[in-house]
Length: 583
Ligand code: TEU
Ligand code: CA
Image (cartoon, rainbow, N blue to C red; front, side, top):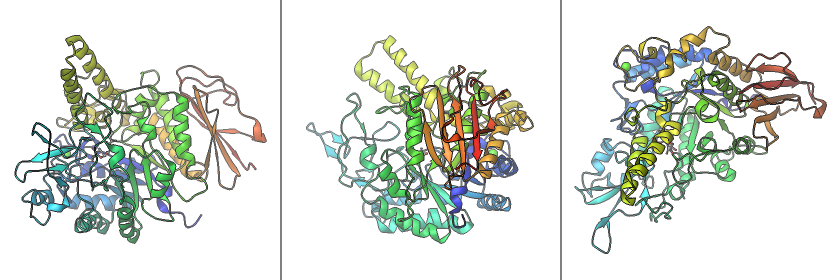
């Protein structure tokens, strides 16, 4: 179909610059490192790259704390390197997306430096300042009880001007005041137009539904009585002016035919999501909805593991696959990013005997679903979570560190026994190991040489111990490797895009807790695919469904089988059948 938006056909590879590839031996990944692997990325079959923040930053939150939108973090490179990267992508027929982080800046950004310098500074109102409250005993208290996303008070007291400022993330990430129009215009110019003019093709938009806050800042309901501060996401997500701001941004993006994929936490309603992505009222091209990656966590403590059933996972995928039917919305497919545990470890099995098959199973799931597909660095070779025996000191993410701090504070407050404390701290460490963000941030495993070939120096973060077994060099020429499987599946996805990228999704056997099966149909109804995925470590009986008189033939399997039409599914095995020319 001729006038389909280009970004619907995008298959997008996400890069986390610090851990991707170090070109100069300082132990930190960099832009030249990315450039040196563009052919590797191209060979994977993707057509678009998204790089997480590479802007200048004090790196309190790995670059999501930006001190200057218009320059590059020096260890990553220069503006010239960025021009080279943009050209390197375009020369290969690939697009490049940057990360747009505009809910907040770093406290080192010159806008905030000015804003905090005095109450009368012209930029005072560019951030969110509020006077203190005082309790009955006359003690100074923050304006409300909100907890930041990183387990602390969301307000920090500024001695110099005697007011609090709001930060939904780290203390060093003050929130911008989007109600100030001059501030918005400068955000658009500095963070968006500066880079669009350089030729970038769009943005992944960080925390896109948090710009508009309820400016009376009501207290959040108390859901954790042990904690002084309370999660308040439902209050500050999807605020009153969100759509207005996004329409302003969309008008700028349209001039460049640029795409956006917005990060949309805490938005469970399909109607609310559609309001952001409907083409009738252009705001965002597509969003990351979080139900899948949030499964088995929380709800109050998002680091806490609660377990889940396969039927629940299927229901979530079904919901976000089908919500665009009969309307003009669009959806995304992703199971990893830099904030999540590795998908093999979370959704299948990273046990040595199952890890390869699990990675292929999940590759088959991702590549056969409808929407724009995202794959995160290392996912293409089946990288796993870090080993469970890593001590807390190896974890570097501010989110995990603050989480452990909060757990310990609460234990002190309740006067827990030493034994209870040890148990709770151990449990917290296991949670961090399962869903902590560091799992995705270990250096990419390029080969079996020291530090996995990521650097010739000392890596900024410890390499996952399994790199000798799981690395790109070992897989690149092996037709049975996870990497080769991803390439084959992305190739099939691209070739049969009417079926996989654009097809309608039909869940089979929603209650089956072992096998995940679904049918995809092209819009014309003449092509069909049947996908069956065994999510257990046991063999599962398999029978081809016969309704519709479909004449299924195997398109691709994850493991060799003699008769794919009747053989039981092996542990973590998947098969895709097709029926072309069906009615
Ligand atoms: O994350 C936003 C967000 O909602 C996080 O709370 C996310 O749900 C959490 O990290 C999951 O554990 C974005 C970025 O992806 C993240 O890396 C940044 O730290 C954050 O914004 C602040 O910019
Ligand atoms: Ca480097």
